[in-house]
Length: 245
Image (cartoon, rainbow, N blue to C red):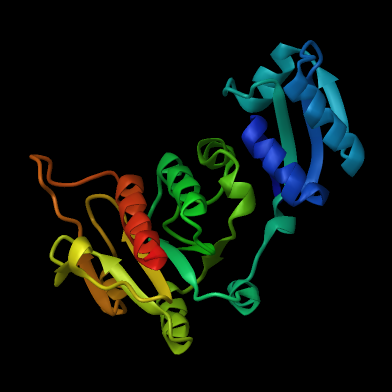
């Protein structure tokens, strides 16, 4: 199966079981683990008629390539996880709140961004198909279930997607050290798509040109930049703070 993808750990597997159980091809479970957490997971697999294979620790280590699997490893059909941006936007009954990741190639950063986006109520995360980490088992593990719940949409032409979002009256705000305003002195609109660029290089030129506003994050210490997932958390949190006022 060309779209077969590995997931492991309770967060990722439970999220998939509750959100999209039909996408699970099979689960491998530690035959020696009988605690409450495992029993609850197995009850859910029975309810959803998910195929479960009991194996020993060595088999789980081999399947997960020695990752911290917590005694549960699964394979999913990733083709059953595709979500279209139009579907997301048409279902919304509130102003769109989106995150766009331009050139985030590190799976740990992507996973952390997805986890933060889910926590801050983002409706979807958008990324280009090329020059992007893409969903994999590391992303799922770091995201702690968010990779299985928040829509992650890849697009072939990010510039065209940004134009389409503008046509829907969604403002495009990008983060840039030379932004014309800073995060704590800008009025963030209700319909917003935040663009985060790669560490070091930032957004690509064409992406930056499509932003309505460029916003800087004030730095009060000695460091000159922050991890992209930390910056993402700051702008999403400030957006949600203003939404709640």
